[in-house]
Image 1 (cartoon, each protein chain N blue to C red):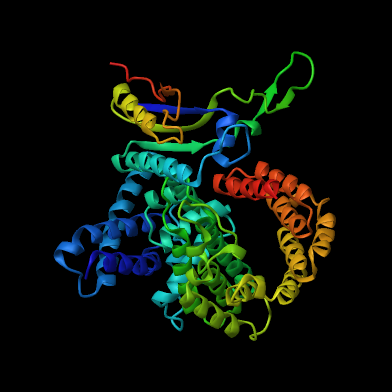
Image 2: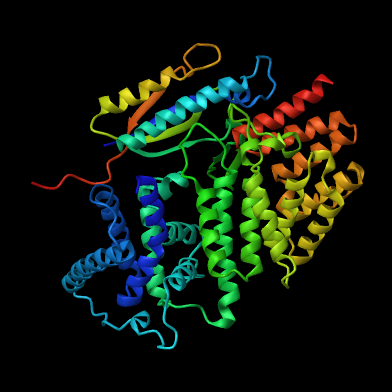
Length: 139
Length: 413
């Protein structure tokens, strides 16, 4: 089975990470390096174990374009539809493993990712099975 | 022979073996699979049993045997599917003219031409070159490009299918198309290098060493075509650019611009080799873009400090590049160099002219150059705004951090 592990962050979190000035102190270069190192190792272990399928990080939420269809007329496009502090999808990793529990175990490790404040780096992480690509054979 | 040497040997032999098998039996697509399987068999057997006396012959034998199996199952499948397509003798199975005995090195070149065939999109040319000529496995290539292995497998098999469908013969391109086809090969190698060189550390995967692989392949082409000035220029450009890599990032992966790099950390041997290649290539006739870019890189690498860079000469070389082709990124670099040679006002004036070019006006590099020139001109407010604009337009985290740090420094002053 394939599962998607979803990580979330707000625009504010991105700003702190890339050193864009806000009222809170930005991450130090060491803090960024530690986070990268942890996540790189996490991803690489999945490659080594053969469970890795795909993983990508998304650019900051401010780059989002939202397209809204309308009953009459052309769809409306909005740039940056999220509030500063809203946690939105920031990245995902798709794994293929034997059980939902194993996928959960993999995802839970991300809570150990070092963060400058010492708090868990993410409030929550979601894991969700992907829709199966094939129907069971008829017996 | 240790494992590292075996890997190096296999990677060098891979295109020669594939070339020999295709020349004998045709079927580029299946021969490529068969060669990969022979390489895998060698990796499994040689470290324990020792390297055979003639490793190339061993690989050709194993690959040929495997190709026979593959052809047999392919034929069986074709019969099952009851295809009406008639078996034709592919052109590449016709013997080469007797007065031109093929050599292993010719085969490597022919393979490169085939992998960079114009029927293929660039991404496929790159993937196929790395596999068929570079001897990398699909998994390694997938990791280098951060795509799932299944995606890369599909990309490579589609590429091979296209080559089969195009019925491109396994031989050197004719004289009239040779120059265009060589350009495509060099462009592919250049893209592979850039993909490796430009990648920064990030939270995702460790990447296969693409810059080193591009240099290795370009070295091979240079050995086979020592008199081609653009091949020489491309090899020089890669060496001279890669030489700066040790100083390009700090201990935490942060980007360090060339002006602030510790030049003692540049690779002196690579610079010496690159400079020698540029000097060898430049006087040999028509000047192409790789030679000119290599000459620019050489001027940077030879400057004892950023302040002692020969900016007027760099400006002149960018003007040569601009005459060779309309490229907005070259125009942007030219503007930056003019700013260094003649003062920021002259550079900013050129930027104004570029602001209406949609190909660069939204690019983060445009704003970064503008910010730098504004900073030099003593306009911290405008510079800060431009650095922020640049940071907003790139999605690369180390780059964003660098640009925000430059902006923050100006707020303090």
